[in-house]
Image 1 (cartoon, rainbow, N blue to C red):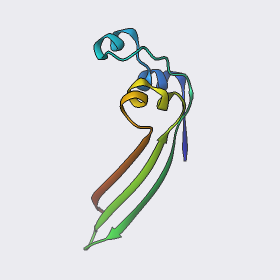
Image 2 (cartoon, rainbow, N blue to C red; image 1 turned 45 degrees about the vertical axis):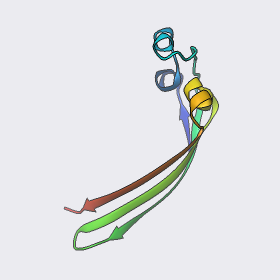
Image 3 (cartoon, rainbow, N blue to C red; image 1 turned 45 degrees about the horizontal axis):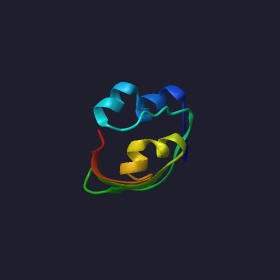
Image 4 (tube, one colour; image 1 turned 180 degrees about the vertical axis):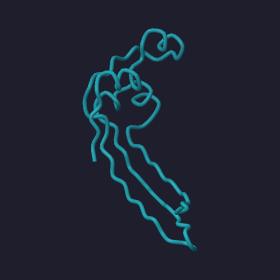
Length: 92
């Protein structure tokens, strides 16, 4: 799965305006619209007891374009993101 993000979204979440640049010490960065990431996820729901179920999920996300080029990611982070989750659910 891949995600396209608007210019407004990319500016909000990945751009660095002059105020944020001064506060963080990172260079200013103008993030444009484009593909933000590509994601592969696997998940499972396992019945436990009665109406209870267990949930498990793992995902790999690769940031793309301006999301990957953001100074915080490019200089201090990694465009490769790994996510895992455990949970329980109850059916009403």
